[in-house]
Image 1 (tube, rainbow, N blue to C red):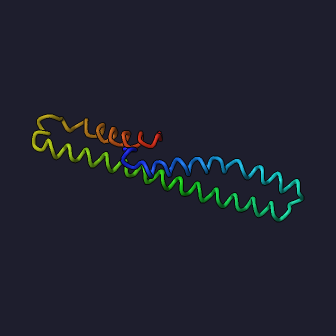
Image 2: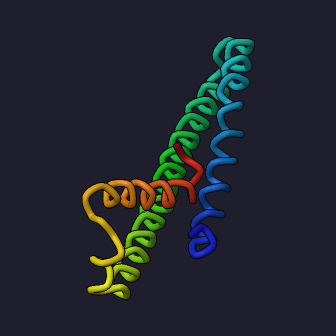
Image 3: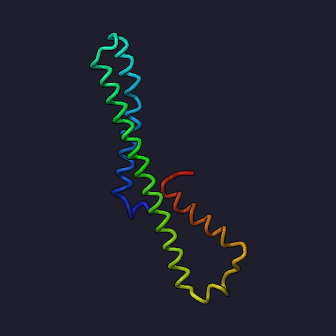
Length: 118
């Protein structure tokens, strides 16, 4: 499923990496701003780094949500196609009382595994 949306996965990985690296900037900029008696340049740099990092975090979360949802929809589509392929024979092959929730859970786990989330 990740292969089907490799561009989106690459974007999510890039945004996640930039966001994680961006988390290291505010402490450095804050220490420089304090050492220079709150010089306006350092304060503006700190504000700018915070805004850019917040935007990166938002875009990373949005991208990963799209990846997760697309994987979920693809999994459900494959499951429905298989059910339609089996057709009337499905009733003879499966007991629907207990396996349905387990199958739905497996479907959800398969889509969640594509984004390495718990």
